[in-house]
Length: 302
Image 1 (spheres, rainbow, N blue to C red):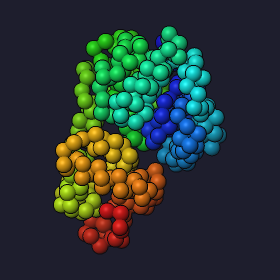
Image 2: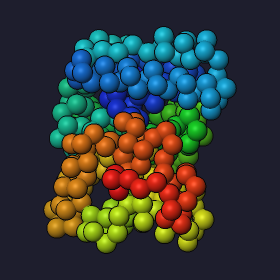
Image 3: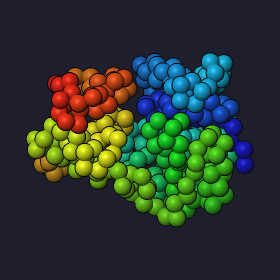
């Protein structure tokens, strides 16, 4: 089964990266989003990826120009869905939004099309019926900065056809990824089953004013020898994703954390993509001399 024409739904941080990675490896990509504004932001993200591929992967300008040329952007769902081999959904982590998207998409797709979700938190069985083709639906989960952190987790649900799992395994290799197949559904897959509790613990320390973000990161880095702390990781993931998750929780601590994250988002502190989150970029404080001893440049972002 050859998967050549790819529709990526959602042009956020990971959606844009998935589109670029697939195009860089020769796939024809249609990136769909719901508005001109969202598509403009996606285009900006895509254009910013070319220098990273040139620096990190030693890609030539010709190679990155070709990758960009293989990506079409549209807000026309029927046009995006026409004759695609694979849809990769990377829209907000809100169940009603995902369900509505799948239900609208289902009648527009050709019979051959497979569907994968890049959801970080939801099981594919949650939405399988909404796709209209549950046997051709599974999770395909990428880690942020996918051209460097090039693992991808493939997780079917009980109704997923094993041939579809194998097809997505082959596709993942074709676009430069290292695929891992999970044996059964697991909330958070492998990566986020380990990562999310770690980041949540850091968020709750910060959200309840136990310590500021930089202090929490310093403690982790000093005590474990890790190259970065949880809030540096959060900046890579992006604060909007964190807000979507915490805003759906009802316990008092999560409500407090969500409010503090929302305040930062309102001030434009989105993470690495906006140039500031819990750190300033491209030269974040945790990489500067004196950070671990508390003698580095102070900041109001923490």
